[in-house]
Amino acid sequence: MTAILSADELETKLRDIGARRYHNRHPFHALLHGGRCSKGQVQAWALNRYYYQASIPIKDASLIARCDDPAIRREWRKRLEDHDGDDETPGGTERWLALTSALGLDRDYVVSTRGILPGTRFAVDAYVHFVRERTLLEAIASSLTELFSPRIIGERMAGMLAHYAFIDRDALAYFDQRPPQAARDAAFALDYVKRRAVTPEQQQAVLAALEFKCGVLWAMLDALHFSYVEPGLVPSGAFVPEEAP
Amino acid sequence: MTAILSADELETKLRDIGARRYHNRHPFHALLHGGRCSKGQVQAWALNRYYYQASIPIKDASLIARCDDPAIRREWRKRLEDHDGDDETPGGTERWLALTSALGLDRDYVVSTRGILPGTRFAVDAYVHFVRERTLLEAIASSLTELFSPRIIGERMAGMLAHYAFIDRDALAYFDQRPPQAARDAAFALDYVKRRAVTPEQQQAVLAALEFKCGVLWAMLDALHFSYVEPGLVPSGAFVPEEAP
Picture (cartoon, rainbow over the protein chains, first blue to last red):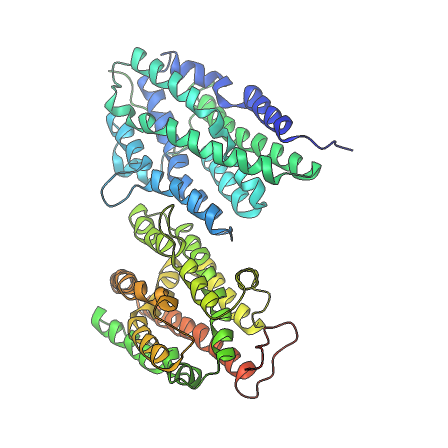
């Protein structure tokens, strides 16, 4: 029988999952941030990742749509605001498009998601379905990769600015905004699961939800690595980088 | 074969549905606004209607969750803000609870929705399911009862203030805010369906969606009327008004 954990023990186990499974440990991450990607590989990463970005508001609205507590809905609505923006301020998805445009990708092509890998689509869709179909507790827990994102974003910005002449600070405006938003969101979600996961079954479900979500991010990099690094086999219909001039 | 309508013909048909089917034509509406309800009947109305109010943000988030256009999501998010409020301002659901409290109903009892009629629950749940399961066009069209709500709200406020000593203007604060919000929302939704319903099939689906939604509001009053007016048979477990002292 699984023992019940204290709230702090649960947090320790969550952070341990991040230490072992978060996608900063993926070899593609090291290539990307270490300056060892070609421009075409960086384009492929940004193009595929767009589908994740564009799906996040769908995911967050799906979570709000199953939540009968107005206080949680209000808190979660901030995520919609961050990603979709408002009448004056562009949101995160728009800032991601600034990155793909800076990388020379056609905006309409990116938004169409025509060129993404099937593996990207399946992983992202699995995340949306998870949030729609599992318990609210698991749905909230699956967001907890944000506990680990401020650090990876710091590494990403430093690494990409240092190594890629085709990327400047404006192109990375998305990442400027995310760390405080992610820290706020992760603090809320962590507090929620620590208070609400009070049985061993709930605690195991929370841990499994974070493992699942780490798997989503990891599988996205697997797909990129397979198609654009090694063996470098791009499926028919997916984005093919132009040869370097 | 159904002929294609011009956008203005479609609007005329939509407004005609409102003229024939909107719940301002229901006998319970006439009783309520004409001052012919007992306090217990007004309580039953406000208690049951709470379930509708509380489900609206769920419905709106469900719509956002199936919408891949950030501009529509942003517009629709205003409805979430109106109903759920924000960190400073209470939303519509909270203002509805001010009404039920002013009517002497226990807040926790209202929020629990324990005392509502099964017919209320089925009608409201049918609306949420409609928005989740039909096309986005139909989901948006089903909101178009808001075209007709500013007038009913005017009638309701005037009638209730004039006739019921137990209701004052503060208790009706919900209705103060709604007309401009509803007018803005209805204008957006009407423009959307006029632009997007371009085949006869889409136009018929839009008209049917509004008829469906009128049926939701109508069935809620049917249930109230049956249980609290004529024959006045309250199902076991549902709210029973105290006898007038």
